[in-house]
Length: 173
Image 1 (cartoon, rainbow, N blue to C red):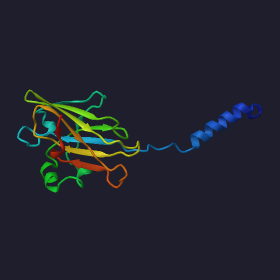
Image 2 (cartoon, helix red, strand yellow):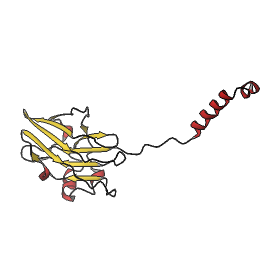
Image 3 (tube, rainbow, N blue to C red):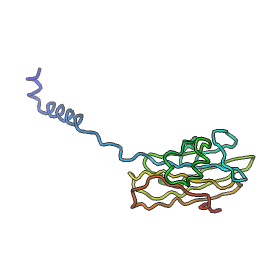
Image 4 (spheres, rainbow, N blue to C red):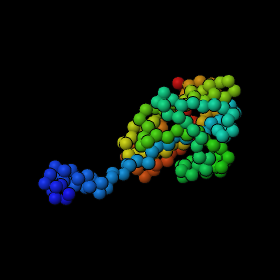
């Protein structure tokens, strides 16, 4: 049988090509993914645990789904104020959305609490595909209306990957 294969160079080269392709290392994923977490606050400005389900929240037109985040705040510990970390850690679950590599368009979130709705827009930075970043945004005291925040980062600084944005950065639309 081997003799028959050797007489057919197209088959031999096809088999060798397949074997070489399988033996070559596969390119690794070049990014870890980007994450955006949001701390919901009630009308008095008190943080609200998303796991308690005292409010509802929804995704955006891009099909991104928000979900319960990590209440250890592990990845943001270095970038958020120590007193805030102490107050929230292990007690307040933020809501979060993730994206493979980077967010390409603004992220929106609708939060409804006590019959009122707050529409939020997170203006994400333009980053290269491999430049995954994580953002933690502190919420405004809950109020009906439309608000936006710009998540500014230095795209040339690759030393930091997790960023915290205080509630004062929000503006009314």
